[in-house]
View 1 (tube, rainbow, N blue to C red):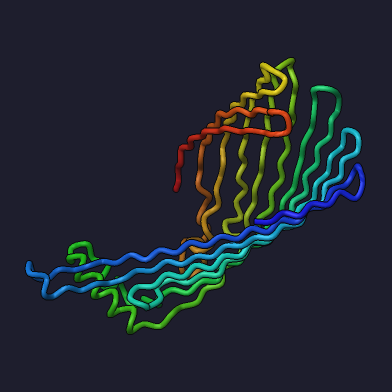
View 2 (spheres, rainbow, N blue to C red; view 1 turned 60 degrees about the vertical axis):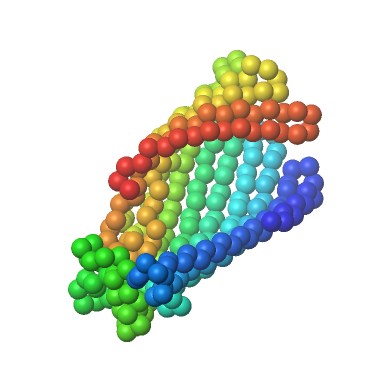
Amino acid sequence: NPRLEVQPDAHNRLSATFISSSDSLKLNLRRFDSPDDTNRLSQQFTYDELWDAQGLAWAHEDGGLRNQLTLSRNYNTNDQTFEGLSYFSARPVNVSLIEELSLRLRPGLTLGAGAEYTFQEYPFTVPDFVTGAPRFRDPAIPLVTRLSNFQDALSNVSQAAYLPQRHVAALWGELAVGLGPFRLTPSLRGTWNSMSGAVDLDPRLALTWAPFKNLELVLKGGLYSPLPVPLWAASNFGVTGLPSSFATHAVAGAKLDAGGFEFRLEGYTKWLANQ
């Protein structure tokens, strides 16, 4: 995951980041039809995923004003098969443009704001099971029979292709207030997405305490509204107008600056609703 950074002068910095990861899983299911193991059937599920991302950023800092503009793209491939037959394939891509501003109004008081636009495209194909509920979905049928029915269904059905797209726009602001060794930062983020047309408002609050010059202790909490995967909100497939999930986060952590090295330790918990 290389990162390239260039600082042409004291006020500007350019950076480029490249990230790539992959994941693969094979699950073998073995069915025993007789105690002496003379009639054994092995069936295989596979899951293969590749994810890569690129980002370009320009940061400018002059006095109490800091500005950063970031352009990023991430691309994902996801393929799932059963006995060599595809039952899910996706090629989602996200492109984002983010603008962040920070202005120090006076010592101990800093105003921050930002804007983000993201375009999401989620092309995927699934088996076109359009005639009722196939027999492999009936919980009253034994699992091995359902798997056999599933394989038969995959062998005799065409693939349906979908191309859901979503536009996401967000604005946020924060005010960091220093009170001696403490810093209180309330913030608010508003997010709109084109699939549901809804606007989610997420208030958050952070409290930082610096008992020593090189040590900070942090408590954070707030509301987050994760958007549903475009797959589940796609027209003619998912639920049109599907709302965001709702989550409450709480974070506790510490940051230690040890002579050129920075150490961070954080723990968090979250409560999900409308998942």
